Length: 102
Picture: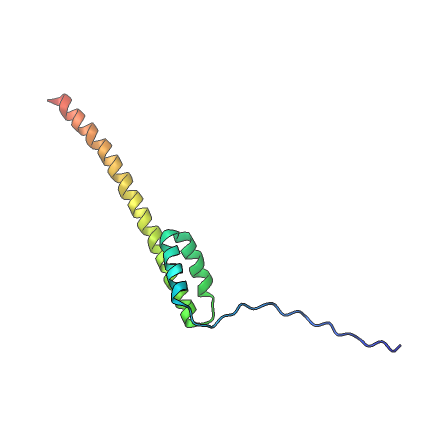
Protein backbone atom coordinates (compact mmCIF):
# COMPACT_ATOMS: atom_id res chain seq x y z
CA UNK A 1 0.00 0.00 0.00
CA UNK A 2 2.41 2.89 -0.11
CA UNK A 3 1.96 4.07 3.47
CA UNK A 4 5.08 4.48 5.48
CA UNK A 5 5.08 2.79 8.80
CA UNK A 6 5.47 5.36 11.56
CA UNK A 7 7.65 4.31 14.42
CA UNK A 8 6.44 5.08 17.88
CA UNK A 9 9.16 6.32 20.16
CA UNK A 10 8.80 5.94 23.90
CA UNK A 11 8.86 9.38 25.54
CA UNK A 12 11.84 9.87 27.78
CA UNK A 13 11.08 11.00 31.31
CA UNK A 14 12.19 14.48 32.20
CA UNK A 15 15.30 14.46 34.30
CA UNK A 16 16.08 16.96 36.98
CA UNK A 17 19.31 18.84 36.57
CA UNK A 18 21.75 17.35 38.99
CA UNK A 19 25.42 17.27 39.50
CA UNK A 20 26.03 20.97 39.86
CA UNK A 21 27.62 22.46 42.94
CA UNK A 22 25.30 23.13 45.85
CA UNK A 23 25.19 26.84 46.67
CA UNK A 24 25.86 28.20 50.12
CA UNK A 25 22.41 29.76 50.21
CA UNK A 26 20.76 26.40 49.60
CA UNK A 27 22.83 24.81 52.36
CA UNK A 28 21.86 27.58 54.77
CA UNK A 29 18.20 27.27 53.82
CA UNK A 30 18.19 23.51 54.40
CA UNK A 31 19.95 23.85 57.77
CA UNK A 32 17.55 26.58 58.93
CA UNK A 33 14.53 24.54 57.81
CA UNK A 34 15.89 21.46 59.61
CA UNK A 35 16.30 23.45 62.82
CA UNK A 36 12.91 25.20 62.74
CA UNK A 37 10.91 22.32 61.21
CA UNK A 38 12.73 19.04 61.97
CA UNK A 39 10.29 16.88 59.99
CA UNK A 40 10.98 18.99 56.89
CA UNK A 41 14.71 18.48 57.50
CA UNK A 42 14.23 14.73 57.68
CA UNK A 43 12.19 14.67 54.47
CA UNK A 44 14.68 16.90 52.61
CA UNK A 45 17.55 14.81 53.95
CA UNK A 46 16.05 11.58 52.67
CA UNK A 47 15.32 13.12 49.27
CA UNK A 48 18.81 14.58 48.91
CA UNK A 49 20.49 11.35 50.01
CA UNK A 50 19.25 9.84 46.73
CA UNK A 51 20.98 12.47 44.57
CA UNK A 52 23.99 11.63 42.44
CA UNK A 53 26.88 13.79 43.56
CA UNK A 54 28.78 13.50 46.81
CA UNK A 55 28.13 17.14 47.68
CA UNK A 56 24.35 16.68 47.34
CA UNK A 57 24.45 13.50 49.39
CA UNK A 58 26.52 15.24 52.07
CA UNK A 59 23.91 18.02 52.28
CA UNK A 60 21.17 15.40 52.56
CA UNK A 61 23.04 13.58 55.32
CA UNK A 62 23.67 16.82 57.23
CA UNK A 63 20.04 17.90 56.93
CA UNK A 64 18.81 14.48 58.03
CA UNK A 65 21.13 14.42 61.06
CA UNK A 66 20.11 17.94 62.13
CA UNK A 67 16.41 17.04 61.79
CA UNK A 68 16.82 13.91 63.92
CA UNK A 69 18.87 15.78 66.56
CA UNK A 70 16.26 18.54 66.77
CA UNK A 71 13.46 16.01 67.29
CA UNK A 72 15.45 14.30 70.06
CA UNK A 73 16.24 17.66 71.71
CA UNK A 74 12.57 18.64 71.51
CA UNK A 75 11.49 15.37 73.15
CA UNK A 76 14.06 15.82 75.93
CA UNK A 77 12.83 19.37 76.54
CA UNK A 78 9.22 18.20 76.77
CA UNK A 79 10.19 15.45 79.19
CA UNK A 80 12.12 17.89 81.37
CA UNK A 81 9.25 20.39 81.42
CA UNK A 82 6.70 17.66 82.13
CA UNK A 83 8.95 16.13 84.80
CA UNK A 84 9.46 19.45 86.54
CA UNK A 85 5.73 20.10 86.43
CA UNK A 86 5.04 16.73 88.02
CA UNK A 87 7.79 17.30 90.53
CA UNK A 88 6.30 20.65 91.52
CA UNK A 89 2.95 18.99 92.20
CA UNK A 90 4.62 16.27 94.26
CA UNK A 91 6.60 18.84 96.22
CA UNK A 92 3.37 20.72 97.01
CA UNK A 93 1.79 17.51 98.28
CA UNK A 94 4.84 16.70 100.43
CA UNK A 95 4.94 20.18 101.93
CA UNK A 96 1.21 20.03 102.67
CA UNK A 97 1.61 16.63 104.36
CA UNK A 98 4.57 17.93 106.36
CA UNK A 99 2.50 20.95 107.44
CA UNK A 100 -0.33 18.73 108.72
CA UNK A 101 2.08 16.28 110.37
CA UNK A 102 3.69 18.98 112.52
